[in-house]
Length: 89
Image 1 (cartoon, rainbow, N blue to C red):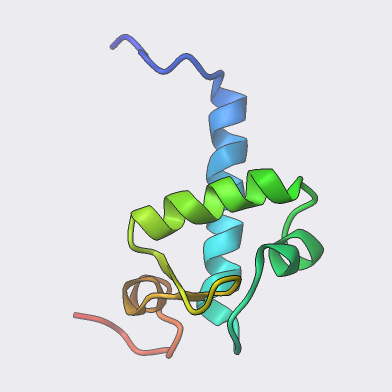
Image 2 (tube, rainbow, N blue to C red):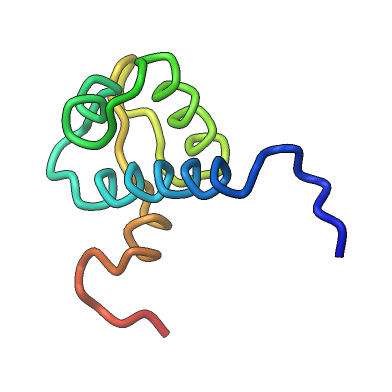
């Protein structure tokens, strides 16, 4: 099978890990978070890079804007991560 993705596998794995780390943070956050919170607590990257990740996650329905600067996880993300500790059918 031919791989049509121009990014090397290692880079794709790093992107996946970054996205998953942000989702874990978002799903377990007890209050709305900002891109600066992600930079401080999750990953050492530029604010622009983090905002790009957040915009993509928002577009895909994993997070939503809570205000002009803050985000929260959607219920879909919380269910996906089983945040409440319940087993979903």
